[in-house]
Length: 110
Length: 346
Image (cartoon, rainbow over all chains, first blue to last red; front, side, top):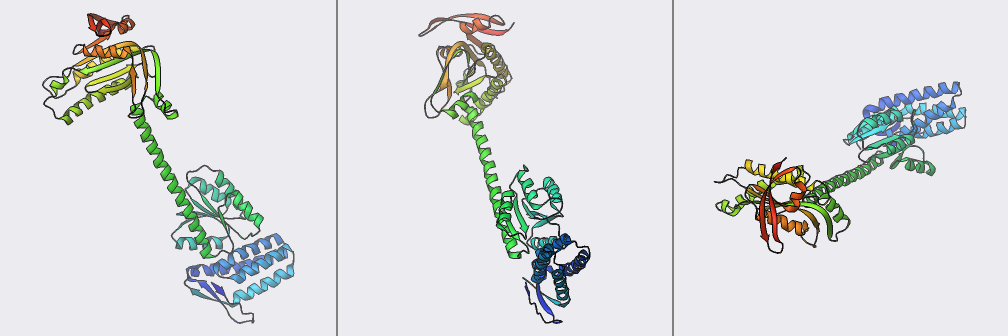
């Protein structure tokens, strides 16, 4: 599984995912969008423990599905939550949101 | 193989299930450590994959609980974690985990570690099976040993293989011979003769065992048993008398399929004996002494269908049993000895 992260805004990001996981991907991505919303909500409450937990989960699960970028973002969010740094959290969420908008998944047999 | 997965994140649950089921593993999911523990106690799992941080019970605690649970068969535990510090890994292994993988996990690495676990489990199952086979063989050997020696003697031989010779002050010895056996079986083939003797002696073995007597040996058509050996008993003479009655009754019932039925000559004597195991090959438990030779003589000079006892046995039984005095016989080396026929109980 590989990810090509093109930093140019608007351009598609090709992510290659194991075809065995094809039917799980929509639910997985929906949960990541839900995570973004949950983290924004937690920020309004200054609930950094909840944010750290969500970041931790994202970090642990992203790469397993083929989305290393989601693992990286999760790591950043978890650390930023531990540092109680809302700006970094928001920046990571915006980056993640953009990423999820731009990804184009290619399924390949492993 | 069935694998129990303890993982609270739904996406991780689905991923693990997909990876493992594709390799034909049967997967059972628990949403947290507590649920995993409850499932583990009621079902058979040999491999557990558990996350570290979970609600209700953490992975470390689940590991510790699994290790303390007494269940047949080894359980291989893989901890899945994003923790990477050495101290955490040491804690995981000390808690009972056999291996760990870090998140996000690599599919190939995870499957390789599961296969490694499966090898350990297969090895443990092989060892268990071999141990079971060994145990059954040991039991078989034990049964064989006990068919040759009294348990008391077998236990002593296991501890120390040097000769055993115990002097016992009081015992009773019985010899029983089938009257005119050679003539009766002259028309039978050797196999038929052995089969007939086998049936008779098997019946005698059963009678002796029921009464707590020791069968000592057989010699041709002669059967030898004793009471009061290897463990003394005060009623040894009574026990042998009862066996003699039972043996005679058995012979009356026994259908040898011959022109004439089998008749038994039984001889009994009582007194001191030496009992033990001697030699280094073809070991056997045997008795020696004057009491033994007298009992043998009682049988050899006995009457078909009767129980002939020595004076020593008569003295021990006269209070409760009925006898007919038979008379005196000359025995080389002993002179005249008085004998009695045991008729019944008073």
